[in-house]
Length: 114
Image 1 (cartoon, rainbow, N blue to C red):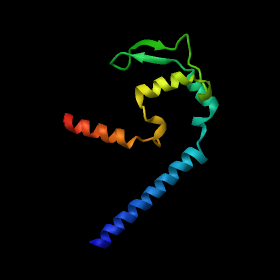
Image 2 (cartoon, helix red, strand yellow; image 1 turned 90 degrees about the horizontal axis):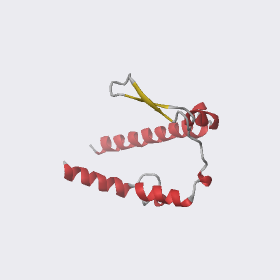
Image 3 (cartoon, rainbow, N blue to C red; image 1 turned 30 degrees about the vertical axis):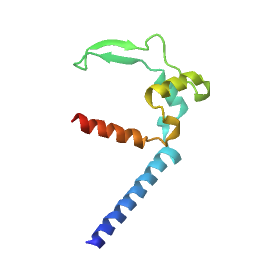
Image 4 (cartoon, one colour; image 1 turned 60 degrees about the vertical axis):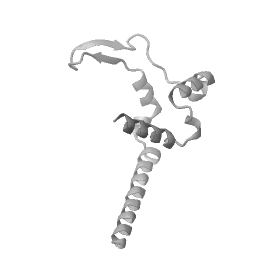
């Protein structure tokens, strides 16, 4: 039983390492055309169509006259960043991307709520 447990743990570690390596390769080493700056500008400049609940009848368009613009992080006012972080995740700059404490707190609240 102990050998089976160790085998499962080893396989999980190997699978995790392969998954992390694959994601690293796809995101960092070979990101593809999707995240090229020109493509990002093209996507951000597109209109956003709004449909009725049937998914076919067009209700309107967001950004039909005023298009979105890409703004680099350094150009965003510090007070705006602080306001967004305060409204969403006041521990944003102290964790590594996943707020384990926040996830745990949400899990407890979900369990309590049923």
